[in-house]
Amino acid sequence: MFEITPKAVFRHTSQAESLWTMSYQLLFFTRRKHAICFVLPILILLFSIWAYGQASSGSAQQHYKKGVELLEKQQLDAAIEELSLSTRMMPGFADAHNALGTARARKGEIKAAEQSFRRAIQINPRLYSAQLGLGSVLQQNGDLDGAIAAFKQAIALKPGDVDARLLLGRTYQQKRDLDSAIEQFREANKLNPNAAEAHSYLGYALGVKGLLLDSIREFETAVKLRPDFGEAHYYLGAARWFSNDTAGALAALTAAVKLIPNHVNAHYYLGLTLQKSGDLQTAIAELKMAVKLAPERVEPRQALGLALLKEEDLDAAIEALRTVVKLQPDSVRAHNDLGLALMQNRDPDGAISAFNAALKLDPNDLVAQHNLGAVLIQKSDYARAVEAYRRLLSLAPDNAEAHYGLGLALKQEDKLDQAVGELRKAIALQPTLQEAHYVLGIILLQQSKLDDAAAAFRAATEAKPDYAEAHYALGSVLQQQGNLDGAIEAFRQALRYAPDAPEIHNTLASALRRKGDVEAARVEFQEAARLNKMKSDKQAAVFAANTGIARLKEGNVDAAIERFRVAIELDPTNAQAYYNLADALQKKGQREAAHIAYQKAKQLDPRVKPLPEP
Image (tube, rainbow, N blue to C red; front, side):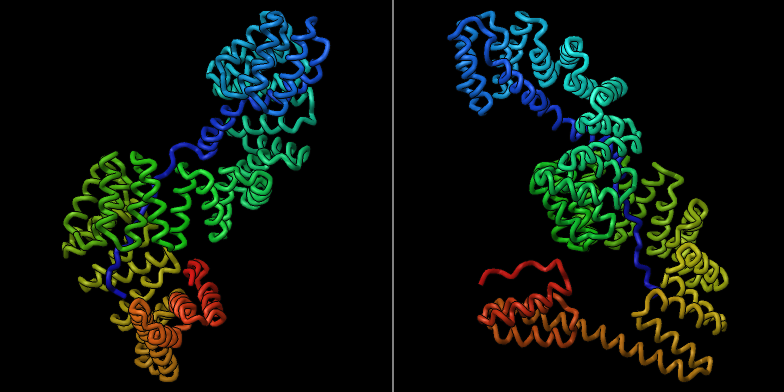
């Protein structure tokens, strides 16, 4: 228990900007990309209505009518051909130019579409749909001021129409003029209180502005008006997520992924919400779906990697985080997260390489510098760890965790007095840093300063009441001081938080025997013996399972099955042994027995992979 296990205080890079703002930036591109699609159904409807009686030339009218019908069927090339014929036959036919602009816009011919809309407006400046079409293509092309002017012209023509208000509001939003956007969305809501889209757009703008409660109310109204409005459910879930309403976010995002199953961010935020609610398995499934839908997106894959890391599926976590680094090689955070995963996987050299890559990108990054010191301690390279922590302290002299890390590294170099000085600095800066109290207690105990050591261990347990090692260490000090009652109480506290630690049971038994409580001592000795046997059996089970794997690779399936059965008998909780037994039984053709063994493995560890094909 007194072996110092470096409890490096790892740190993930914090995100400087709010997640809502990041979501806004990510999703706004999607909205801008599809801006025209909002207008086109309206235009088509108008064309269908106007398709008759608008032109004096019968032949031009026929080509126009046929072009509109083809446009409605999404036969864009044929529609463009017919509408172009109509405009050539009758150059002053504004509606034909307007419809041609729509067809070209749908095909992605933005400049040509702009020309068609401008020609329609030149012929008929009061053509409302052409003003909307022009504004849409200008917005699509990044000419936001031009788009705003066109939408304002449309509003002047039809002040009571909602669509132009919404498009104008969205363009203001794209310009980051949130106040003007909100004004237009509010006006749209006044004109038509039952327009779900208007409430959704208003909610989005309010959310970006940081008015989350107002934002949530608008999204709630939108989904009430249109229960099948998937995007509004998504934004409602995101807004609730950012306002820490996990249950509300879960309900809205679950509805969103059902309505819009290919929405990357809906799956992403649902994954984050599920993880926060404690359902890590389902969270990982949602994040995997987000990654599948958008393999090049960094955020879902990064979240997946960290969730897998939390699940202790280290190989999968490292694979995901390596991909993040490939996608975003200039990201300090990506290298740092990968380094933490490698460190957890006991690959200090790989972790050191990752943290150094982060520091190459930003030599003053405190998180990467801190984690570099921690992994150097893990590698027992204490001299370099000291250098790393001194570098960190030159950047952040009041960083308590840096003083703690430096003290730990100095302790491992047997520079005890220097270590004590650093640990006391850490405690002065952060009195609740339990590891600093604990390591200080260990050093003071080594120096036979029992009273001071006891005080340090007590401080550690006050900072972290479930700190089993500190309770145990305190008991050991009290026992040396002859305070058996105090020692026994401390050992019992340690067992409260680490009931499966045989050494604590054994030490408690010795203290009870010295106290004269023979029966209680006997019980503790028996429990220590039971736990030691269990530990020994688990180790033997691992050896037996590894032998079985070797036999299986050799093709000796019967010997492998025997070894896997021995492993399971020694340790019935060994999921991998059940999995390997299932694999071996399947190779023998014993499908039913293999299925039973596999189900047991999956029950013990839901992460086990499917069996290979026979």
